[in-house]
Image (cartoon, rainbow, N blue to C red; front, top):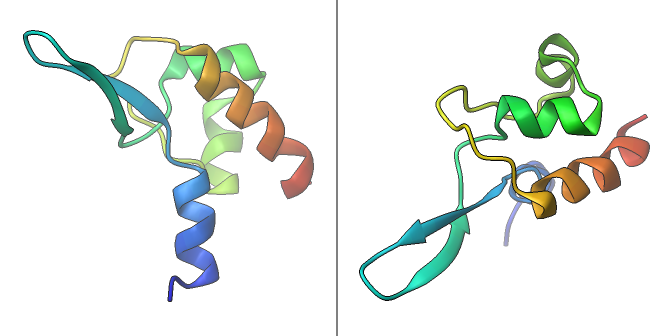
Length: 77
């Protein structure tokens, strides 16, 4: 049975696209990109304080990750 901490971290994990030759699918990523945090209106320091994972290597901005951040923000306040 997953612990509450694991459930929270799973909900904070972004979805990223992986691709092979023919198939594109979504998987859990390491953290949210800086662009996604910027679109959601969250600074890097605020994300670190709230425990939101950040992946500085990612450059893509996926709308479903921005929506997930916007949904989680009011719950954490």
